[in-house]
Image (cartoon, rainbow, N blue to C red; front, side, top):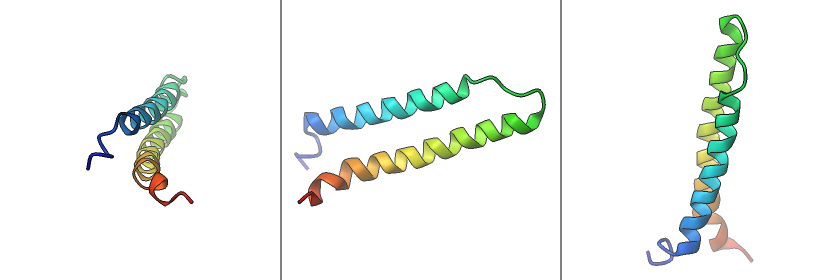
Length: 69
């Protein structure tokens, strides 16, 4: 449990979450279309990137370093 609370673990996790937040924010600030279609597509893309990004961040942060050869 001590390895999980190491400063490098927390720093890596925060850096990855911040980069994901910047990416989703950039997509969120992109201009919308005039009709509802592009708005829904943008929201779907933001939701997918957020969920997939958080899953990848947690997987890479928690499991990748343990099995490195």
